[in-house]
Length: 179
Length: 152
Image (tube, rainbow over all chains, first blue to last red; front, top):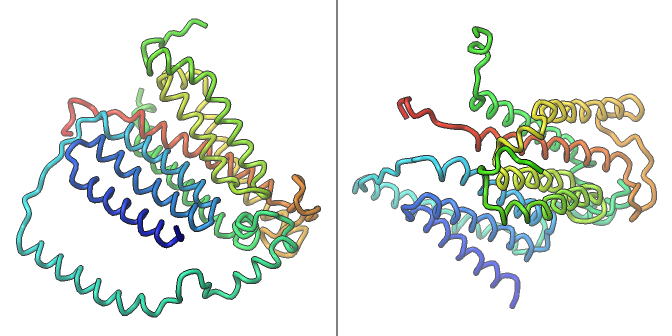
């Protein structure tokens, strides 16, 4: 089977998984179906020949599902089923259909599958090993050509940890000083 | 080994198997980041796998058992120190080479484990940062408890 057919299959699984995630009433099953989407994405990366991305996506999806299960599944989160409002639904469907029709014209302008648009990719493929001394080209891009990006990524992670610690820690600073 | 928190966590079967698997997962994370410039993977993936090994221990044994044995403030310090080291490597690059975060070590020979200049050092820094950070995020999110008396 060619790669495109596998990708169509994987995309179908992802769409079915996300619809199931919205429709299932039990919150544990719903979280596990979120995991389907991420794991299928990791499979898609493997089929496209990007093992670095597939590894990160696979590992990170498992961590996310564990965090979601631990944070939400045992709590008594109440699910409220909203009544579907007819005018809102009509407006949403019309807007989605408009975007769909417009995106058909936009997507026709894209280059065909597997043709790179950016000419700098050629230089990475041919010269990255020589210029950086790293065998893995993805690492050489992340940590040598685009090392500022990684600095920003670390800043984002640092801020995320600060935020989660500030909101979720047990004793606030004021309370501890007062004791 | 006497365990005060024997009732917490999962069953005895899971705890026994955890003893065999958790260091294998940790070792795999170390392998992934040490070989980050040679094979698929790198600091981020290795760090997430190391965080997952801690998560594995926490899930199997319960959070009280783990928080007695793991120094969480040291984890915070390591996580912040690795961020400082990243900036320091950049400043050393500014001092020795020309630009901020420029490679200042020799490139070495291709396909060797000691090669690619400062990429393995940056991998180590990112691995420590991501591993400690994601475990701390997991710990805070998982140990958060909603008060029964509150509004929600």
